[in-house]
Image (tube, rainbow, N blue to C red):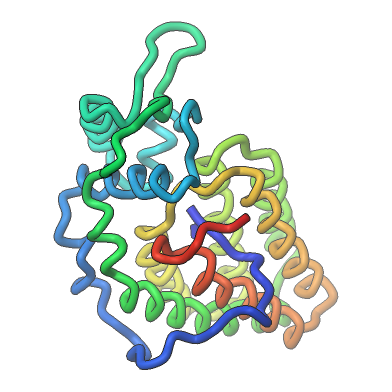
Length: 255
């Protein structure tokens, strides 16, 4: 993702008409935001969509920085800014941390920049679908025992993650492990780029939902383990195609 989503039935996934096959993410509106404003927008939008509720605790600054691919100081400044605007509250001491305010403002900042990026996001998803199918197919042909162990370890970390930041880190490790197992050296850099470009749009999803998505990862590893490239490719296709419905914030959040 990845925050993120997946696991929506492929039967309900509909391709958005009229989108170009690829869109350079450099033209996306969020790239015109500062790093701090990007973090602010992602957190604010997650709150406005009900993905984070009043009183929910955010990950630590270090975990947040890793999950959103920013520096820790950027994460800290974004949290301070959102706190000053009454969207978050920060409590010092033992048991303290950063929490969603009990009554955040009705109008949250910068969310329009995300909501306006629909075409770019759907094109990025399409790009990742193509790459995910390829690496999953060849992982089923080429994965070593060490590769499979790395995938299973990442799945275990996702299953025990207590917040979306920890889940995101393990999800990234899982998908990069699948790509490495494919032994398609020429695909490694484009695949990592596709993950990075799409992860910039991931939002903080409830951890219970993410744990359900993890079932897809288990099914993919099972297909790779039994050396079934067709099944692995199809599981990967459905898993990523589902992002057209479940990831982008202009769509209804998952139940």
